[in-house]
Length: 468
Image 1 (cartoon, rainbow, N blue to C red):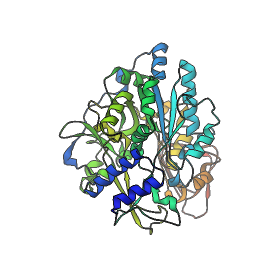
Image 2: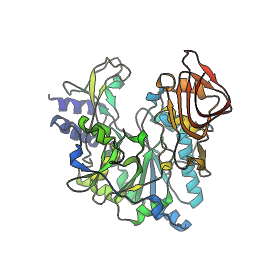
Image 3: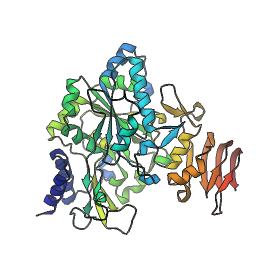
Image 4: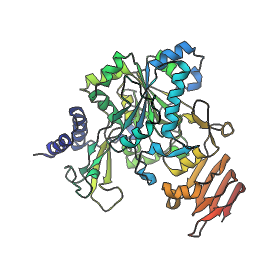
């Protein structure tokens, strides 16, 4: 039996459906045919000009807003565990601000919009097999959140990890769950097709999908954007933001040099020799916020035309079977990116949005900024930068060795968080415990060369390097 048949057998034995297996087969065949998923710089062109959100802002009547909201489903991608931050639960359950976590903010935003416009705004979370139980347990505190005519969650499929040398499904008996990995958020499309939701959307009069990451609290349902998308002929719209130095290693938007279509190039799809130009933020100016708007009818057309499996570009990642054990066997993980579908839709577009619509938490440094007074909570439960920030978040750098994991982060900032409203940049090296009444202004470095944790005492720290 060849390797692909063994892979498919393993997937069937795990209860995975035909559509999911077909999607993985597409990626597997691309891999063995020599496809690397790499996008050479010579095959693309930079994106020069794009429309901006502020250009089409206009007043929308309550009647129009109610109509649009009732035709929309808000999707939150919620499959990630906080493993990189030392957690074994859904990352969206991390406390963000005032005792509320990511799911709390999202749930309250949805309920606020329903009440304001008297419209049945639908809401769905795309969970993984790792996050489903914890997520649903927490969302029980919002009994009215479910749409009634739709499920509250979809379960993302899983993909077998492959032995790097043989491309056979890896076996790891001591922890069989590590034989599987998430297939990337591009899995949303075959999952929608497999569960029959596309047809149900059409029957319910749902015309638009707004999709974003659960850890991005800037990604609320913006009615101006929704109105722009609804009145345009754009089938697929990506929100992008202008790259800064802190974004240079992330994926960027580009155009295919042959047909001019927009495409997304992730860092894993960049050749080593193109690394410098990939990080050139003056050439490739825009990055994908992963806030996407999709027309239901056009997505349904694309799915039917491709056997329910969109031909998304392959992302090939080399990992170890146990991510915590770098000496464990190397494996290949095959993934796809949801935003890469932009190149499949003729007429797809992008819009430049303010930085406030992109506030994800990838590290404890991001979390510290959100917990501080650099961000504030609005009446509609959106979270945005304080006006004094002029749209620019503080640049925070916490030393990995002492702050990467949530338990050590909470030791430092669980009792008090510094004021960062006037902070340009903050770097902390060594273990500290923040006291109440700390205010950071301008560029500040806090240094503790001793192994024991030291108190960062109350006071104003302005453009200084301070040893504790």
